Image (cartoon, rainbow, N blue to C red; front, side, top):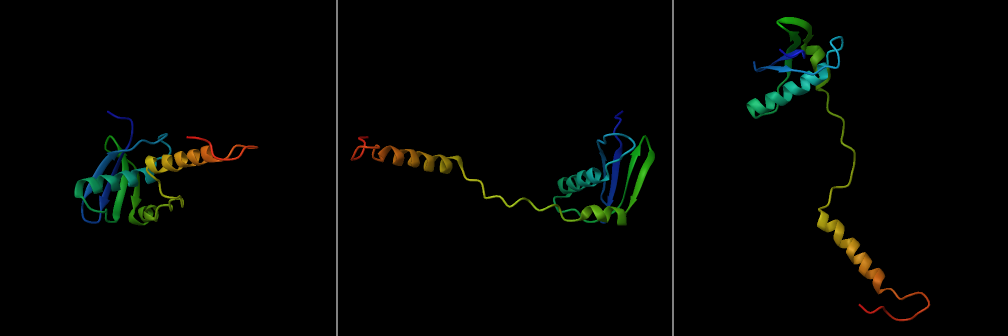
Length: 120
C-alpha cells in the first residue's frame, strides 16, 4: 500500500476522481496539488474542460483526513498566473542564418589601414 493520501474529488456533473497525491508530510496536505491532478484526470477521461468541483477530501485506508467544501475549492479555481511576456521562439535555422550572414559581412569589411575588400 502507498503512504501517500488519496485525493477524492467530485465534479458538478457527477464524475469522481481518486488519485494518490504526494504530500511533503502528513501534517500538511496539498489541496492545490490534489485539485490540479483531479482536473487533469477529468480532462483525460472526458475529453473536455473540467466543470466546478462540488466537494473533495483526502483519505488514507478509508479514513478521511481532511474534507473540503465547494467554497474552499472555489478559491483554487482562480485564473493561473499569466505567462511571462517573452518573444516567440524561433526555429534554429532562423537563429543560425543571421549569425552566418553577420560573420560573412564582417569578413568583407576592409582591413584596418588597408583599402579594398578581402578576397573570398
